[in-house]
Image 1 (tube, rainbow, N blue to C red):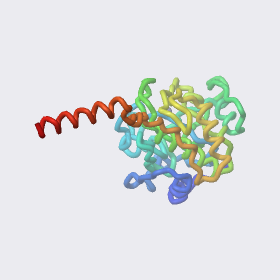
Image 2: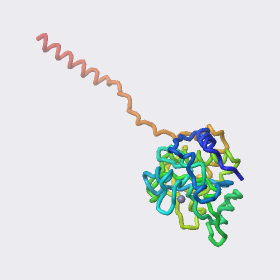
Image 3: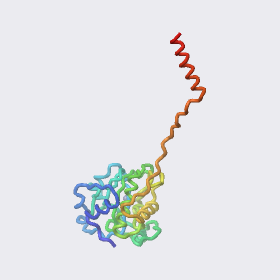
Image 4: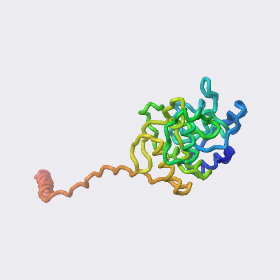
Length: 257
Ligand SMILES: [Zn+2]
């Protein structure tokens, strides 16, 4: 069980984890608690999403979409890796969660079953932090390195603060009974790993690895491709030297003739 963090504390744990942060104007007072009459927390997991758009910050932080008022997440994560704070309260991101899936994150099981409506449902917005990561979600739009690195850091920051394992980090498609498919798509790379397909399991593995280190840790940088080596100019051969010498002699002879 964990009591939701104050806005100040939320910002502080992200900064400590090395995340570049920004604050959406008015974010500390924005949430879906008063309007719904429901209280945010206790919180038990982090839920990861993709925005399915390109310029989603204002939509996520404030405006929301038809039938779903903002804020739509606690954090908006841009392609640059900048995390913008959107809310420290209740946010409209998780929708209805299947109880069997939710329980597996609550209990930090090593595996997470496919969400089953038959197992019962809960309101995911009461119990989870939401991260909306900017990506079209079309399966070809790439998550840049900086964005994925920040994504791992944000998940780890919550786990570190609350004493959770990486098995408390879920993805919308793992809990939703509404047919959500997010997040998905190719990742440019992470640490020494080249391009790979996003999977919840890989995200959790990367969060678990991060949690073995201090918050200030950075993964090994990718090995930079070696610059093409230009061969050193060869010294002239004896024949070339003699030829050059002969030319100079001939030129001199012409001048003195
Ligand atoms: Zn989602």
